[in-house]
Image (cartoon, rainbow, N blue to C red):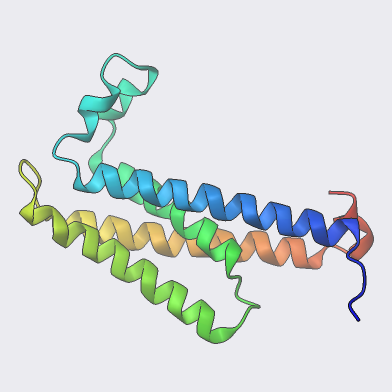
Length: 147
C-alpha cells in the first residue's frame, strides 16, 4: 500500500519535469547552433542579432555553462555517484564531440579553443549547480515548502 503524495512532492516532480524540458530544449538549441552552417542567419533582423558581435569563445562558454548547470541540478553531487559520473562524462563528450563534428560541416571549423571554452563552460556550470543544490539542501523543510 502506498502513501498518498503530498503537495510538496508533486511540486518537486513538476519542477524536475520542467527543468528536464528546459534542459532538453537548451541542448537542442546548442546542438543546432553548433552544427548549423550559419546559425546567425536565423537571428538576422531580430533582437538577438547582437549575438553576432559577441566573442565566439564567450558564446561557447555561456552555452555550455547553462547546459551543464541544468544537468548538475538534475543530478546533484549528493545523488547516486554513478549517475553523477555518467553525467559529467556525457557533458565532456558532448563538449568535445560537437566541436569535432564541426569539421565535417560546410563553413564551420573544429577549433581547439572552442573546445576549451566548452569544457570551461561545463566546469563552471557544474560548479554553479553544486552551489545551488547545496543551498537548496541547506534550507530546512519548512523553508523549502514555502518556495
